[in-house]
Length: 199
Image (cartoon, rainbow, N blue to C red; front, side, top):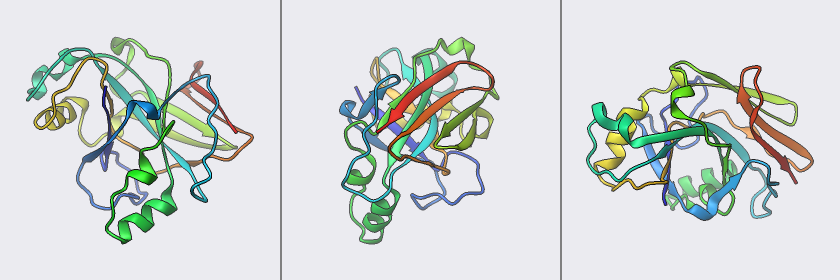
């Protein structure tokens, strides 16, 4: 399976840590997945780690060069997700014009909630992420390009397969991950979709 993390696709006043202003993506390996209920151990290869909220869509069938109007047929579920990134390391790699992989794509760097039926997701659904006393809201309505366009964009160059995940738009506002805190994410006033102890 592949995991596609879409950057520069979320409306916010915060500056993108990736630079640029057009939607793009990077890939994460399946070893990056950490499911809700399991602890996240803060790595020691950088000074700071933040989690950047997103909604994640699961692909349910094989497809290539998918038209936006048919893209919904390829989604079989969604969940909340958080991409863990070392922002200081990322800045250093960008400034040195080097690949980003070490800062954005490592073991357990993709925090995933429990899969939900796609028909339960509202067009302008708002979610709340919280960690260490800080909160961030994430709105589906703030995505600059909808998942239909994103699926079409990715599938122009990549064959999408059953089980692939698309993090449709990383928020540019991250929450710091520190030991002895707890990351939760949920629909407003509902039970947690993500619940992870940070160690």
